[in-house]
Length: 128
Image (cartoon, rainbow, N blue to C red; front, top):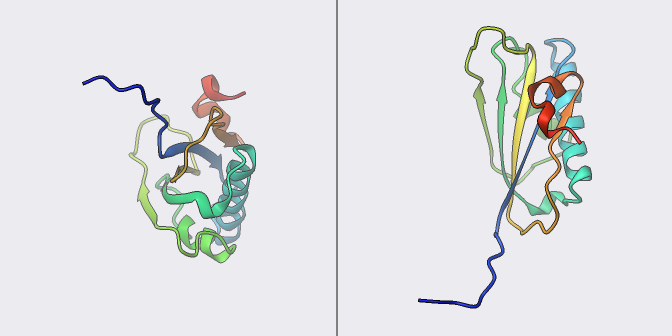
């Protein structure tokens, strides 16, 4: 069956990562808030457009759950958050939090991944 409709995705997913300076609640809180704010800003997304956020952190970050830090900063009060630990891989970058922000709206422009504070080494091919 043929159709003349153009397809526009109903969701977008944007990824980002940040390397945290130290494993303290304060450092994790600042890092996750900065990463999230930057990701929203660079992609011209309003928080109300976020459908859910997947968060991972490396096993050496144990002093705070980044989701708690995000909520403490006043974000994602009604957004589902799902946190998990990164796989332990030899040679992996230490003290890293990653986000996958899923929006429930079409994104007409290319998404801009955000890598901060040393996490740029994870995906140099995506750095603009």
